[in-house]
Length: 116
Image 1 (cartoon, rainbow, N blue to C red):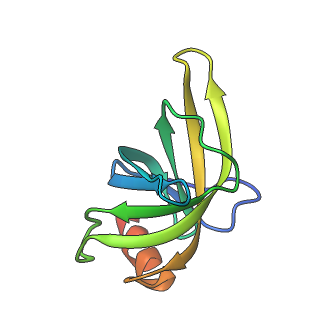
Image 2: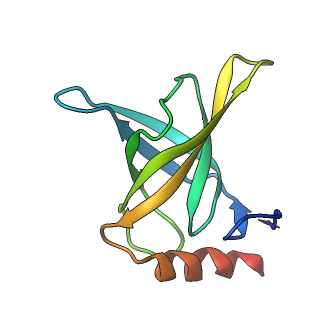
């Protein structure tokens, strides 16, 4: 299901894609297994119990996505976070900044194929 919101560069798609987020610096790294709420060629959104710092760098590993052989490694940064008072969790938006083993164009082509 596509969702076009004003001010967005990329159309977002509702997707429940398994992802792993590694954040932190130096010797401390935490990998969190999550399921995304939506994804686009520019980033993704997920819910978590952790208050991730804004602008924190993240390594997003998507275990599989359509016809793209996985795992997919994408570097990003925490662009926004919103507390969810109803459940004490956070919605977090990660902006993709660099693609390791898939191009932004290939990712976009795959998720745009979900429109049908």
